[in-house]
Amino acid sequence: MMMFFRTQWTRKLRRLSSHIGIASLVCALTAGICYPIADTIGYQTVGLIFLIVVASLSLFIDRGGLIFAAILSFTIWNFLFINPLYTFRVHSIHDMIALFANLTVAIVGSVFINRIRRSRFSLIKSQEQIAMLYSLLESLNNAISIDDIVAKTQQVMLTHFNARILIYLTSPGEMLLSDIPLGDQAIHSQETWSGALDIFRNSATGPSIVNQNTREFQLIFPLEEPRKRIGVIVMVFPGPDQPGEDKINILKSFIMQISSALDREISIIQIKQQEIHMHSEKLFRTVMNSVSHELKTPIAIIQAAVSNLADKRTSANTILQEQIVDELNQASTRLNQIVQNILDMSRIESGIFRLNKEWCDIPDLLGTISSTLAQELEKYHVQVSIADEVPLFQADITMLTQALLNILRNALNYSPPGSDIQINVVVNESGQVHIVILDQGPGIPEKELPRVFEKFFRVPGTKPGGTGLGLTISKAIIDLHGGELKLMNSPERGLAAHILLPVETCNQLTDEQL
Image (tube, rainbow, N blue to C red; front, side):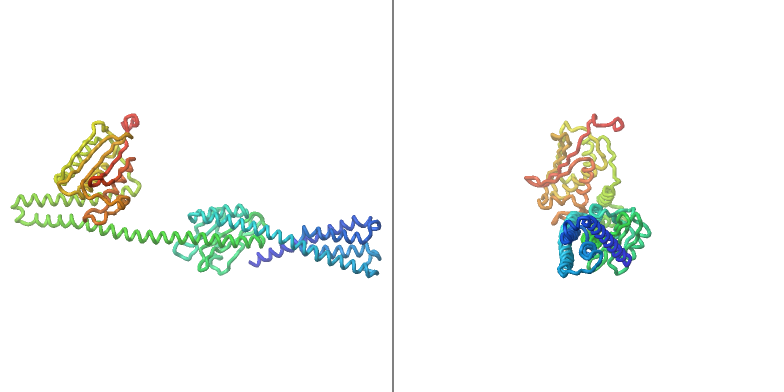
């Protein structure tokens, strides 16, 4: 920090020296021009010329150089142009008054002109700073993530300061600085990281100079909010020249806005993580309650059936044995369905699931489904209608069968025994296979329809049973086939499931598929 202020003073002294040099050169040049014609124009006119020259200098040099120019012009006028020449003695009281009046007017006038000029420059600079701050604020307000904030900060800093930036933030949930750099990765080095770590740990508010050479100049500022430090920003400026005080002040304003924007995004991330954690816990409890409840029923049936089969009295009763075997079969089927749904959902969500397409015939597909659900379908009046023009099409038969089984089971579970279940298959105007499964159950409330495909969602008030995964899996499988699944309440009664599947004709298939 001391080095930084020492450099600033060195810069000011260099500027003052250059202005004094300019003042000396201009005064000497004015004296050289006026000396040969002094007798013609008179020494009073020479004094006025020096006064005009000093006033003009106020447009180009600072106050220290102007005062020096006023004193130097006073001295030259007295020595070279006022009698007795080549001495500093003044015999006439009028000349004495003229000399000091000229000096006073030169100093006061030039200082006021210089002050006005500096005020104008300050006003212009303030407007530029406001414009820069506005552009930064606009960029940061439009940022949607930490990476976006860093990218927009890089762009603004490069545009307005020709500087590259690197940011280190605290580790999530901790007050330790992470060594993962954000921004210009070329800036990252062990020296830079060590300097950033020192600034973060110390109470200093910066800036701190880390590296200064002929190619670049590096400053480090802490990124902090009123109650905490959220990180450190490293700025690299080209060339050996350091930014002046005006740039340092505007940089501090920039950094305050950057800190606020980063803190905002960090807070949003923490809130989202808390929400995800709470949602995960809630979902875990829901899944465990649902799955454990669904598993208990078939397991209890299986245990009871096995216990009955072990009873010697059961072995002599053939009818009772058949009933127990039937219960075992239903329980094992239900258990297998629950496990299969959970496994299918895991496979689909993992992203590694791939369809194994082959030629699919709708009558064969529905025949397989009818065989699987034979016992359940005996309680209903099932009507199947397949249009003659329905062609063969490419599909993963195993997965599509699973999807249609889930949809049909859903229709059976919520339809009263003895009611009609209709399955209609046609080809629509778009050339898609259109399967409609229509039941006569209570339907679904309109406000709940958008949620029926959510995992583990069950319509409030429905009878217990099921994990809430069947329709979710069916929709995912049909979506993978490039199709569409829609549920709509029937105008008369019940729920209609519309399955749309694309048809690949022979012309669309490759030789390998054929």
